[in-house]
Image (cartoon, rainbow, N blue to C red; front, side, top):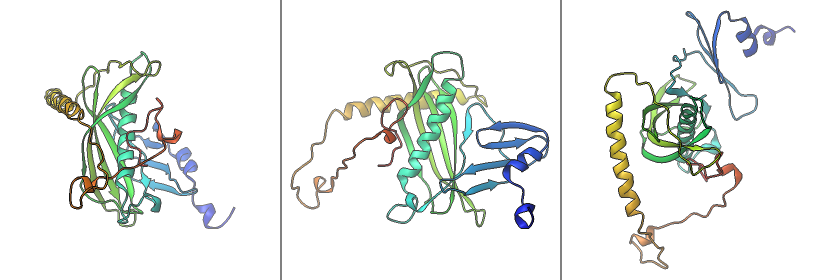
Length: 262
């Protein structure tokens, strides 16, 4: 083969020709020494291949970056930005992956981490169509039966290289047995990176536990829809959504995905 196409090596050729391959995790490749990392990700569009030359951070058992994803027009809301539900789904998937991986890190009964609570989600800046979303998740605390995960979302303009923090979230997961979804398993302890981190996490755990109990008590009062409400009232602003749940909406347990955008 001759011409420009023959002069451009493929991703496979680059990987094969790079010496001292030290690590391969998912779709990311990192090389020892001063080698740059090659991050290869296939995007939803067929034939679209993204490369980034940034050095990947060292793998940490309680931290995990997800492959980047380019935002497409079908991810847009009515304002033309990326739909909040799309970002929430990526956040929940990142939390589910890292917590499920951690809960299965020791020999024992296989489980899947189920979303128990979205404690906080901050939308700091809009993400635009055509930008690349980088989602990273980190386990910041574990109790006997629950996992706290903090997720950060960065947007990257691949034309200018500009990056910005768009979202931060804190989620809690519980490991459910694959054999019996009503059985909550114990969570393996996490190794903390600094002194005092465990005590800080324990305080957050107790605070969210108390808040969840209060929320459960308040949810006992079901708000009934009002027919033909008066204008400019709370009842007038109520709305409802009817959605038929299908297999694509569900997790491995058969329950609706916590970050599903109808």
